[in-house]
Image (cartoon, rainbow, N blue to C red; front, side):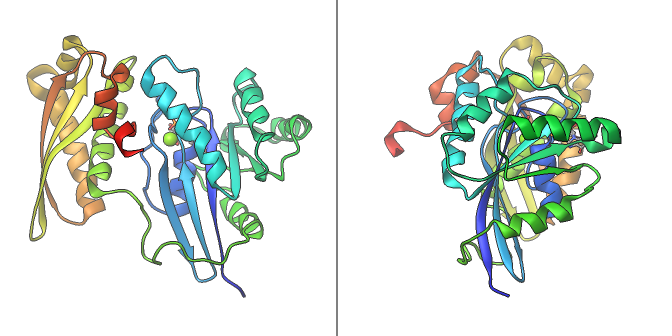
Length: 299
Ligand SMILES: Nc1nc2c(ncn2[C@@H]2O[C@H](COP(=O)(O)OP(=O)(O)OP(=O)(O)O)[C@@H](O)[C@H]2O)c(=O)[nH]1
Ligand SMILES: [Mg+2]
C-alpha cells in the first residue's frame, strides 16, 4: 500500500465540536475544549501518522460575527486555512438549525476548489428520524463530497470518517516526523491549558475577556516551574478570577497543574497572577504579544 498524506481543515461555527473531533481523531488532547463559544483562537495543527498515512489536521476558530479585533483576526485565520488544505470538514452541530452563517460559509466553499465533507456532529443528542431529515436537507444545500454523521464525544463513526478521508488524500510526502503530534511550542500548550480551566470555571463575559501569558518557564531535570499571568479586562473580573480568599485562582491552578503534569510528564510548579489590561481584545500590540496576531514587521 502506498503512503498517503494531506492537510484537512476543520471549519464551523463556534461550539460545533471541532476541537473535540480533533482530539478524538488524534486519540489525545491537542486543542482545548469548553462549552463556551469561541474557545479556539488560533489555527492549531494536530499531526496523525500511521503506517500508511499522515494527516495534518487544522483546527480553526469558530466563524462568527466579530465584535472585537480579536474576533476579526480569528475569522481571518479560519478563512485563510481554507486555501491551505486538500480537504475541508465543515462541522455542524446536529442540534442547531440552519442559519445565515451557514449560508455565508457555503458561499465561501464555492470560491475554493477543495472538496468539502459535511460532518454532522453530536448525533448522540438526536434521534434517528431527525438524522435522516437532516441528511436529506443538507444534501440539497451544497454538493458536499461526503456527508458523514459522527459523535466527536463518543467517537461514534469516527473510524469510518478516517477511512473515507484517506481516499481523498493524494500526496505521498511525510511532512512531519512520525512521533510529532503537535506543531506549537510548549509555552502555548501551557497557556491554553490554563485558559481552558478558566473557561470551564467561569461564566458570561469572563471567558471571552481572558487571555493567558506565560512569563517564565524553567525546566530543571524532571520538574517545570511556570509563572503565568491571567489577563482580564476589568477590575471586577480580576476579583472573580481570584475568588474569595483566592479560592478561584487556587482551583484554576490545581486543575491546570494536574493536567500539565500528565501532558508534560513532569512535576509542575505553577504560579498564577491576575492582571487587568483594559480592552486588550482591541489592541494590536496586545494581540501580537499574545500570539493572536502577526506582527506586521514579520509579514
Ligand atoms: N453531546 C455532544 N457534545 C459534544 C460533541 N462534540 C463536542 N461536544 C461539546 O460541545 C462543546 C463545544 O466543543 P468544542 O470542541 O470546544 O467546539 P469548537 O467547535 O471547537 O468550538 P470553538 O473553539 O469555540 O469554535 C463542548 O462542551 C463539547 O463537549 C458531541 O459529539 N456530542
Ligand atoms: Mg475549538
